[in-house]
Image (cartoon, rainbow, N blue to C red):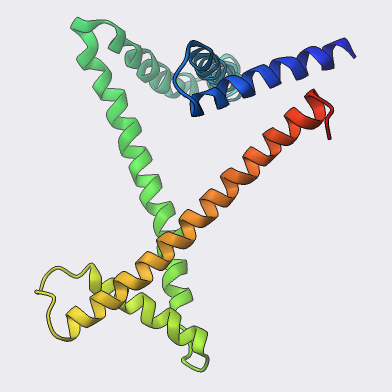
Length: 203
């Protein structure tokens, strides 16, 4: 019971501290901001150690035999080399593992983007023109692509199509922005309800 009360007061204090930035920047907000960043960093350090480094590297290295031990030494050495960035005269060595990380991440990201976003969007655009919704989708897709076609000057039919594409782009941006605002407002409502119900017991 006491633990719940203390937790509620801490959560309410931090919520008010973050919301105080709406008035102006202040030390209470900076304290809550730094606390949030510190706790998040600590959480991810523990998470990476518990679910990545220890089970996938240390435990496997202890139980490994033969050539598998030598294979596991490669990521271990690359990880240690990455820490050389803290030493100014040897910081350039850290570029080697960072280049591996960036290259692998880019390769995986491009593949995932093509398979998860580009190809499904293309397939979803190949629609029969038998309904008004399908016609609007196809027209929006084609005119938006025309807007980003810069190999020729936008005049004539290309100019009209690109202008129509701008309208579809603005509608998409507006819907995305509205959805984002709605999601943030729902989060704000949740925190206000917490303050009035769980903390002050007004509601």
